[in-house]
Image 1: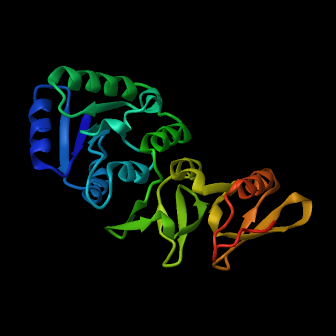
Image 2 (image 1 turned 90 degrees about the vertical axis):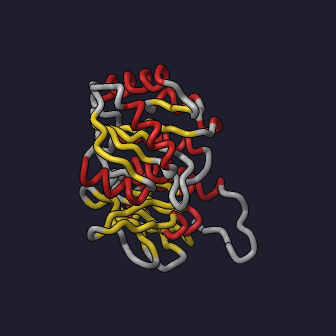
Image 3 (image 1 turned 60 degrees about the vertical axis):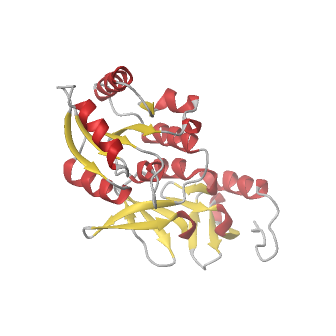
Length: 258
């Protein structure tokens, strides 16, 4: 079982490394000090699972988990903050180690990891929903690997999402970076801010300026930046319902028409 430690505090990494040394079935493939370094090591080392701190500077463990390429390694969160340990997490994710933990608690987490690795991969949408529930708050940013470097993309910069083979195109004002994810999984992780509008597209609700009807029940979404996004009849009713359910727009942020 190949594991990667991700924690910004060296004493925490050292302690976990010493404890893992007592488990011969574990191969510690590396350690990362932050989310950017972790994403690069995941791509290079392909670990089975991450032992991942949640509270890290710049990019949190939750945001790293949302950015992991599919198929993603399993995650055991290791944190000093118990407010993230909600029932939805235990039902869908691997484990949650609350600092300070002991050898027996770590042993049980490793046992759960072995059990999950022996099973078929969980559906991406189910894992994503668990992560979104665990976060308790919207994700602020995603990590994207580009030409050997890692780019931080604020979620607020994303207007819409487009499926492209094994990737999702993040349409932003500054470019169109590619994230190796499924569209369904990414929409789940981003939460209520985004709505699926087509089998190959999803859009941020507050970027929709209008819904333009087309033939046969289809539509086209005109975004505030001028982009036009297809909306198939399969998703049109849900898009309109979500727009109608939004709180009234404040000054300078008029609601979309449909």
